[in-house]
Image (cartoon, rainbow, N blue to C red; front, side, top):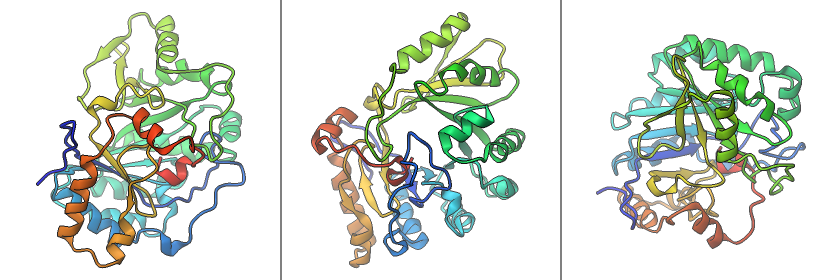
Length: 328
């Protein structure tokens, strides 16, 4: 048995949000006052998350990315990582974090053979970072960046390109890949900020970002990526690292999608842009067996929409969620 949709795509990658809470208030993710966080008992327990992951891994899911909110905000998250690391069917456990809380755990993450860390950092300037995140934690995050870069963990930097805020730093971020073996990834801004699409002076989509970079570095080379990669990847000759662009909003990467998402409250999503298909938490708490879970996952994945535009159309026009609620 395996998870395959009606377009023949094999699902092998789970994005699992361990919490909807976050210690930052990034403008493109949530309103300044934050979001209405759910009651703790509505969140999946670690035991439930472990079981869901185990069942999915028996159906061919071999890569898990843990997101939030901010995963390190949730108590005992590192212990949960330890239990997940015993699942021999998982080839990769990756984490997306804002970096403000993890610097004391880097040795532990290395010991657990965590594969990669995606560090969200949208500015290299303290004041601008504070404006974007509405918190004064730049020193912490930059310190984490330096420690991760020296660790054996693979490091990717996630940079959400925000019109009117940080487009003047795109070249600075590419330059980080000169001496550091990192992957910088520029992400198109999306409308999941708890309010809907932000007014933008100009649209910084995939084409605008790559053209801007090529104006500075005409020698840019394409890097061959895995078929299911979310980013189109590039490098500057003789630079140690790479950079890529994730067309998250223009959605030119849907054809090879191998992902599903489960939110912190157990909502199963075939696509970032769908409204959620069913709540796996309630199914488990109503006594579902592992075989019943497998059957449900197989049926649900079969109906995965062809792309994000179809998923969005199916749900109507309500895109006022927060990225923190969806799971980064």
